[in-house]
Length: 220
Image (cartoon, rainbow, N blue to C red; front, side, top):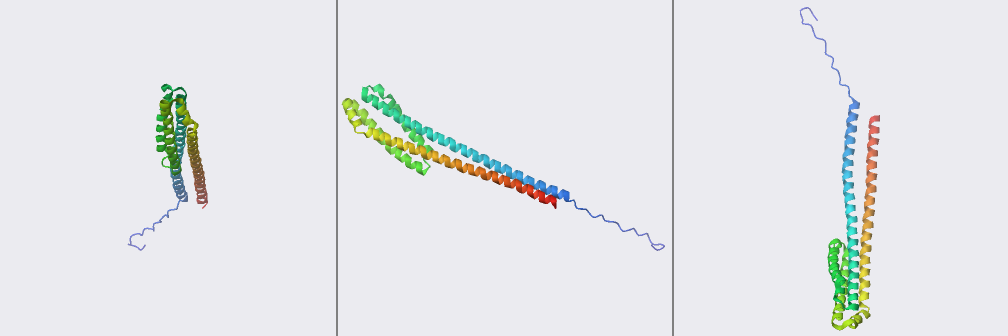
């Protein structure tokens, strides 16, 4: 500077901020990992819902099969009851018959509540109601004939083969209901198994994509 002029301050040196790639990579990796964790939590929740739904279907099938078995037992009680009464004529022998009639009505109503929403089972229920009405009507005729006409009158109805044919028809309907319910369960279990397989494929792909992305990111 010239004499008399104030001194000039030297130019200040501005320090340029040096980028820190390590910090950016760490943040990107954290965000990616957090996204995978959220996806895993959601997927695990979905899988638990699927497991619960499958367990419900298995329980439902067991309820249906149990009700069908009880219906079959009630049919046998009805048959044994009126058969014993036909032979002996003792009113006490009708106890299985009376309890069987009450039980089979209750089980038929229970089956309607359990499988009434399935189109195929609706057809079986209609066949069950029709066959059951005929079977109960014939059983009532047997009991009435034994009371009014004795053993020979009841035996004449039995000899027609109608009671036996009605029992065979009912057993066939119950077998069809069982077969359909078991088929439905197999189908639902197969669908669940397929969903679980796709779940693990998706999770494996997601984790693999995360690691691949992190490797590429840190190599840059």
